[in-house]
Amino acid sequence: MIALNATVFLLETSLGSSGNLDVFIHEYGVVPIKFMGNPFLNWTSLVSSQFLHGGFAHVLGNMWFLYIFGDNVEDVLGHGKFLAFYILSGVAAALSQIYFNPLSQIPMIGASGAIAGVLGAYFIFHPHSRVMTLIPLGFYSRIVEIPAFFFLGFWFLMQTFSGTSALYVARVSGQDVGGVAWWAHAGGFAFGTATAVIRRFI
Image 1 (cartoon, rainbow, N blue to C red):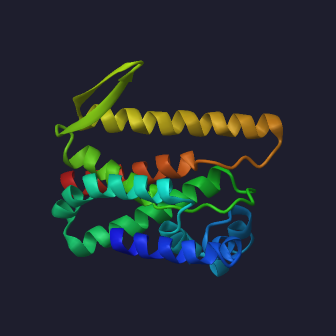
Image 2 (cartoon, helix red, strand yellow):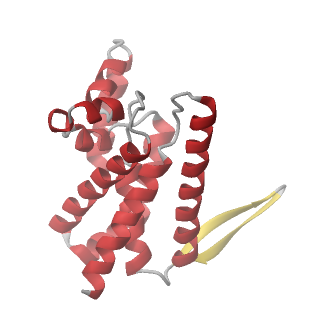
């Protein structure tokens, strides 16, 4: 998955020099208002959008999280099931963002939603594992080990808080606010958590 995301990103980079990148993003990214107009015609964008990224930092951050947490979840699910789970997490994430912002004309891209599903599964499968975390304290920072349960739980709460704040800003301003798809993160995480609970306890 990391190699595939990297390959598609290189394709995006080549299109940027030809001026066709915007067309490519609008064609293969998820545009909520376009999807709502004809879901049956645009359903493939729920998958294709997961392999597009908005820049080097975007793809690097996503692939770093996938590298750290993905193999542990794959060990539990198995290779084939992990692939299906990853894609479905991304689909659930995109649908969550569409639900909360159905009239947006801004393309939604990135593997963040699918990876949020991986984080949700990790939250259930390995709650007591420890995650090395950089804690910034002004001029002094330190790296500490935090239980995955707290690290990922706090991450999920931040996504829902940020998503709620973004909805409020959009409602007050009356504008189509772009940026981070917070509800895609929250939706993907919720899907991953639910799937892991079913897999582990049922």
